[in-house]
Structures are given as structure tokens and as C-alpha cells.
Length: 189
Image (cartoon, rainbow, N blue to C red):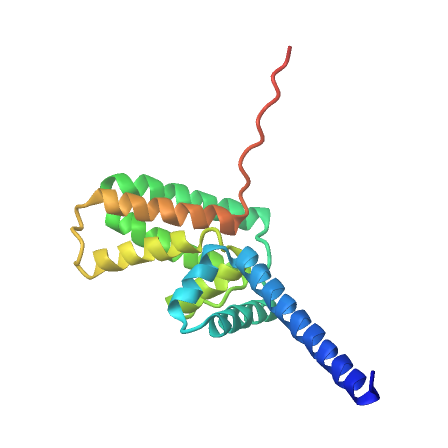
């Protein structure tokens, strides 16, 4: 074989290896974001014109939240929030719309206490999606119901919608408070 042919062959081989490595890294990055964000990854893909811009936005979210000083709540803070949640639950019987507003405000207070900025709703949801991707959809669903109720676009007497919103808020509440399900008790013989 001629030396120029070998050189061209080696260059082509190196280029093919480079392209394969780049494609592998892109797939690995996409898979990592999909795993990390769950259904939020799919939501971002629907909202952006292409995969690259959706993934760039999710990566920027991660970087933004990494710059924040997110902390766990102390047991005293957690206990106070749990007591306030119980109070909101009790209020739900007589005033479902008011209790739902209290739940929404309480979520904002917990986020702020943990170190999340509490700007506009979409920014809060984006920030929450980084560390709590499993419940961010609950937050969006609850917030949408609360907004419809506040705007008078939903029947304020429709306690079923408000109950759903309250349940959605509860899922986020538990996740933000880092409440674990109680371990099953061992039966004694």
C-alpha cells in the first residue's frame, strides 16, 4: 500500500472513531438527563424545538440549582411545618379553597426555608424539578387548579378539584420535608 493511502485510511478511521465517541457521549448525556429528570425530560422535549435545546435548558437548571444553598430542614422546622399542614387539612373541611391557598403558600415557605428562590411559579417548578423530579408534576397540577379557582374559572364549590390540588400539594410537601414512609413493623412471635 502507498503511504498516502495508509495516511488517508488512518485519518478516516480516526475520524470515524471520533464521531462514534461523540455520538456515544451525547447518548450517555441524554440518558443521564432522562434518568435524572424523569417525566420532566419529556416535558422539556415537548416545549423545545429540538433535543439539544431541551437538554441545554435542563442542564442550565441543574447548574442553577447547584449554585443555590439548598439545605434540609431542622427537626423543629419540620415539626412546625407539619403542624401547619395539619391545620390546613382541618380547614379543608369548612373552606376547601382557602385551605388550598394555605397549602400553596406553605409550599412556598418550605421552599424558601430550604434555600430555593421563590420567584415566579415557572422558575420555582424548574428549580424543584432538579431535586424533586418525581413530584414537580404534582406541583404544576395543584398550582393550575388553584389558579383556576382563584380566577373564578372553576366552580369554587367543586371540592373534588380542590381535593386533588390538596393531594398534589401533599406529595410535594412530603418530598420537600423529606418525609419517609414509615418502615413496616416487624411482627413478634
